[in-house]
Length: 480
Image (tube, rainbow, N blue to C red; front, top):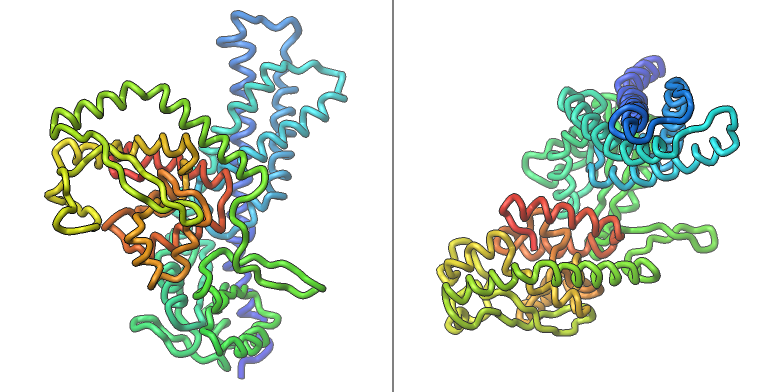
């Protein structure tokens, strides 16, 4: 039996090993952000008082650099406090940069507003409003660059074992298997998968020991995180695990067996003081849904107006290559299961499915025409669907619409497939920007990503998907 002295010694070592994750990584991130804000303030100061604005709008008072340095320092401190309140420095894992951009925007605007409100009462020095505006516009890209550099440092440290969380998994079934693969790929996000507690459900997955040995296993393998994904009927063993981890510096994560039924994001609510797990919610409602429709309408209207010459050139290319018809119309299933006509530039030979029936196109498909190959590579064949966005049949972002034949087929064997129709279909979606497109992926994978988008939808998520879509299309891989 391990003595109390040895346990305390082991716990102390574990805490020292985690010090990099709990203290130094957040501290490095905060230093990067503070330096970025002060640099943005000094650059705005130089641009305002020296070049180029200093030559055309010379200051009418004596310039005091120290006051602007003080302003940048105060702004940096306030931003760090605001960002900390948004939990910007509390995560031990690497957060995708597109998620960081939203926090940076909110933090910058709120911090600048708070500092300007305080300066309003400071009468001993008159600050330049142009310098304030310049600081705000410069600090946002400066913070994005700072966070990018920090993430490179973070990945470098993770690959050397600094700040990495050692993870063990208890569970079995498909959910446990998927978690195992995710953690194995998660080194750059700060995870180091050690093994499983209990029998290993997957060949090659090392078993550390049984549940009764858990307390000693945590010390022996210096575990930081234990993920519990029990199959239905084995949840009663969780109390034994919770009991075994009492007083130990290890985090517990629980993946309910209900996740097999609902892959949606599970939310916790409370009724009468008791926690309830909300497995399904209304994905889009209220002012955010109205804002989404306004954005769809405005963008599609401007796009149709500005790029009408491009539509003409593409139509001419299709006509010169294969003649009429130029467009291809097809029935698709959209929101609430309603069918609508989707229109594309024709990329295949006429009557391409006359013999085969409804089938998906594959790479190197002989039915694809010469002009069609070019249009498909750059996703230009999808452009006429902008009209469907304009009239309200589709949205810019959402699950890709499928043909009625395939909807009927997939809904028979893929759980929750029909939940994709709780929102409008989109030109691009979460599955597409994650590389799941056409024959390159399974319908089960794309459905899982579509359901994730629906349950986690926000205007900011739409913006992230659109940014990644542009990057993907420019890279020649297509995302629509």
